[in-house]
Length: 224
Image (cartoon, rainbow, N blue to C red; front, side, top):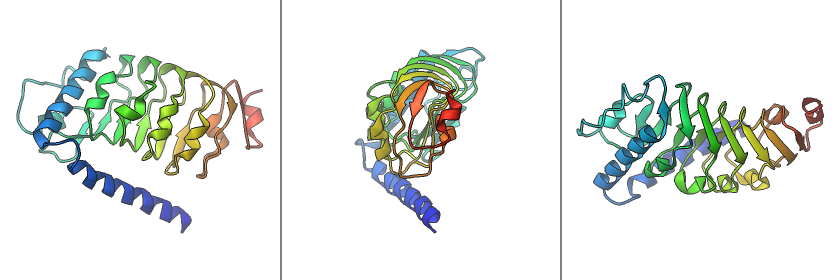
């Protein structure tokens, strides 16, 4: 019953978020232009080795909802240029985290996993993704520290940063993300204590780092 309650809570948050976003950010036309610009900046900032984006993301069309037909893009409504989810997993994309992503003002899910992205995760990522519920940056080459501002992404229930080159400590403030259901930072270069999540986060979520330590009795076997 407790587990069901958590999922109902997540669903309720998502529905409230959806309703709230209808009234957020001014007129519909402004939101549409902002989201179109968002996708343009993503396409321009990434090296599209296998032409996944260039073959699908055609901005010459200006009809309502045209970006909703782009590969890896899902809109809140198929006839409205307001982006809900972006999923660009396993496309061979190269470059850094697309900083223009913040122009997709209603974005709830971002999946850039299994690409060849590098550089740091933006320190102000919560400003770029204030309503994100799922963020998957796993299996890339991101480096630097995990941004403290992720703790301000209060709607997050999925956060996957595993299989990168992240260093430093895991911000303990991430434990405040009380909607978290899936969390993974395994296979990085992290050190220090693990956050004390209220939700069920297993030791495998932290596996194969350098000097992590925490409450899990089985943690040490992963770091010897």
